[in-house]
Image (cartoon, rainbow, N blue to C red; front, side):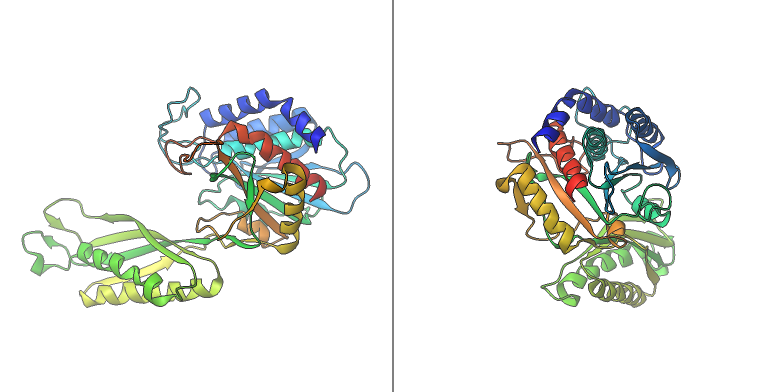
Length: 393
């Protein structure tokens, strides 16, 4: 692996410049036009075949054929979108777009896949390589659209994928380390919408109305029993209401209220039990106050599941690339969601975490925080892992 590492190190300054440029110019899901153009331009400069304009217009699929006859195709994925967060890092390359920032490190993910692509053009390749530069991971299900369009089936470019690998920067681990687990790696993620219909009145005469805000408060409290009293304590479920929308004035009881939240589970059976219970709680708590309410759910992201064979192959490659001491087992699944999960429904998949916390530093800003920034020191580690997986995965 030394030649790969040396080739990547030779372009360190260029990769950092690319990452900072992406960080300075973040774009929300399905709006990644500048990022799309940058990726296509870099691929053209490298002489790599690619197709842009995918998944609503901003997705890119690239293909490098094997150097020798091969029947195996390895796919690699990077997400490109930013988040609607106002950056507070104070960096000289901080976001130039008010209210939008790369708070999840997708600028780093895109840079690492571009670096891996460049490196792969310089070596002998025993496998065909597909590279997916994906829009709209943050709630837009860009991965689902790329699979539906046939990116992994060889219907757009290249050949059908036999396996796919993806990564995510991980503040919980130090630079130079990776973590993985077989089976559920990240939870399914579904949005919950709750509509409550009450009866408006003057705030001074609440007995003439049916207060949907009071109903909403009781529903939020009652939903906490889904985890504590409905689901087996040895199973995992999260029900969180993150948004409450009701009222127009301090002295008016409104006609309605709306709640929005998220449901996270690790298997289909738990999801079905939880959604059934949530619907019952919402409907019946509202009825107890004389109101009406219904809960609905979006399609959401399925569980990000690591299949046994590619995950074991990843472990072997990580040991040989980084060393035994730098491969770690993730003890429990994350309850965060990932649309990499859609790829795993089509081909065997492995998703791993890449350490980004500086050595000797106990804490690091969390993902989705306004002070987060991807650590440039992790770029060559991630690029080397992606290139190694393409060659041997």
